[in-house]
Length: 184
Image (cartoon, rainbow, N blue to C red; front, side, top):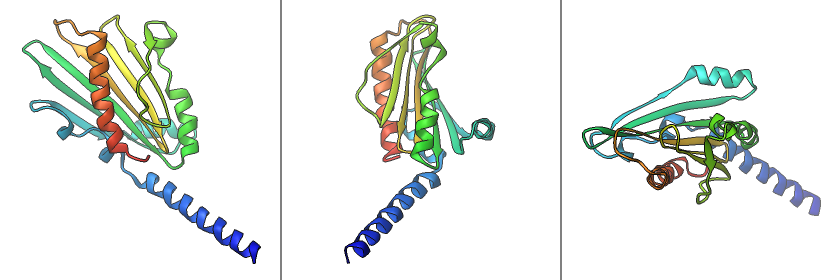
């Protein structure tokens, strides 16, 4: 009797786990990236799937659906805030963990041009940094379940854009992307 109850419980757990994995594998990365409605009026926004990136990942053993987005937000007559990133949906969280292990680093960190920063948690794992020269840039990479995502903030213009401003913008858009990705 106890063995039968244990087998039923294990089968139910396996079905739940399979359903959760299938749910994340079915998510389209285009529905998870930041959308035009996430940005102020007059923002130029684009988003697209990138089969070339998916093929590159497949060459390294990752089956992922990938979408990228870019928003150009005018700030005054001479300045633009660029918000861009990527969402990669993998079949399983184990694959996402393996992918994230290599994805969380950036050449600017290795070259000591950027400094890591601590931010509120946005997922199961994350890596964030700010680069001040050349130009101000903030970058956050997150893994939540079977989804790996990124938000990057860059400034283009003549007005000064501080580290604090870059981090504030990063938090704003990371919070929105966290909501879109959900449970991963």
